[in-house]
Image (cartoon, rainbow, N blue to C red; front, top):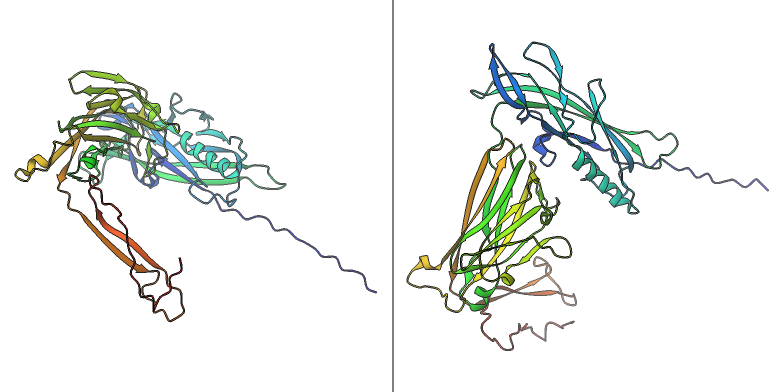
Length: 452
């Protein structure tokens, strides 16, 4: 009898997606800031002896992102216990013709260390978590949110821009790299490494400009008491689409049609790019000033629901005809971030405010929003935006649409057919009692058998 053969089991090494490391200028919320020749403002430029140089440098922010974050979390990225970013500081020629190295702004660059060899480093440590997906995602977010590096370029000489008249600019290159330490590293397992270089442009062009501010609303209102008594939603949307941070924000909603009153304000999180995933707005509100119908004012504090989202019932304070919201003095809205506030109105007298058949202007209800703030260099900005809804007559309608799951398939006898009934273009008067309103499906019992 021959010897029994042993089965050999071999285990291959797990395969992980490669991390992607990206360097940004100004902020890391907008992909455009990671592209070559993205611009930044380096400070006040002064000309002397035929040379244009930065006389008073201001800090230029850089930031990083490690993906991972926008990819899949199902174990496809090797988890890290820590990561260290090293930035090779750019070099440039100063007004005396000497080669200089960018200067680390230690007052703003939290956690960054100048190594004295033309590089700076910062180490990030992952926070403990029993949830592997949360552990990974939170660490990627921690790097993204706290990797800001601020550099100055004193006496850097700028040159005439090749395409823009009366503009000075200088292109420099900056390289960042990262070394990640795998969590529970296996024997012989290497570090995770990645690198990214960015050609950025320092310019004398004024990039601060103004953010984008818009007032919008839900649509028109039917001339029905219940519709006019309901909360009507308005949107105040502000986005900092400039490369520089903005501060000292005050939002105003104090110019509304006198036939309306404010009933509610709500708000959730700061926008970061296209997503409302930033800091909760409730935490950055300094105070809210209400304007009452008699002209008096009341100061109130921001209120929040159980999830920390801002939610204020204004009706408990009386008839509110305007409000303004002041953000905290130390709040700064970074480039790429935005603020969205929702405010609600209803008609003061829904019974007597009726659709006017003779004067169309009386059916229009206008609301103007306003925001004031300052740019990084303390330039005051003041923007307004308005929106108008109309009171429209209520014309009742009710249509029914009937479909099958597959309209293009010809069914034969004996097959199951699933029909769908849908009510469309439904406009009903909530002040009316329609009694036993129902949808009736008519079918031929000699052809179809209903299976409920």
